[in-house]
Length: 214
Image: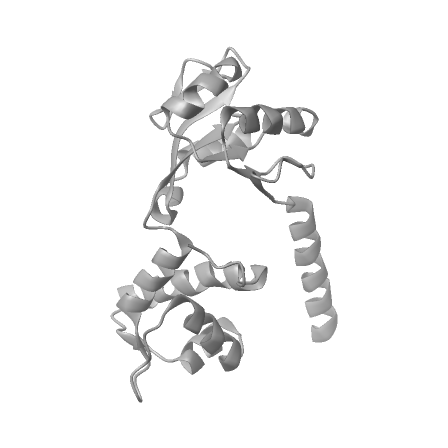
């Protein structure tokens, strides 16, 4: 269970730590220190040390650091990757189809079991062995499929309506990729992913970097 005292910035860093640790584990590394991890990822040693203290009670060994395999398990456990959650895609357009085909979610504790759409050209077919249902069946199938999370990749104009449908069906977590900020009742968690904001940050960093070089 993730503590409410953990900041959003920390949560964003934990998967980065995990990805890097898995990479160097495949290269044959067995131990890593906070300073080495900080240097590799461009962070301060103090920040890394505090982050690792949140996810693991194990102390590093003198002159060697923390055991990488154990730290990987601690991070996966903390992030909930070891307890798979069933999820659905709502809106099987280009992005929704890409998510249905993506194999990496299962490694991060997310088991996408089906997609939902209103397009008769898609309903009744499978994508990556995952069935596509009509949205009219949402209420019945959420319970049958034991769905915890819905990933919204539908058009903005129907996104809030989909949130309302998902809430009534019993979904408790919504990962929103529709280009609109959505709201739900207090017992439902929504994570709004603003791709345009992320692009703006990337563009700003590129521009700043270019100016520094010149």
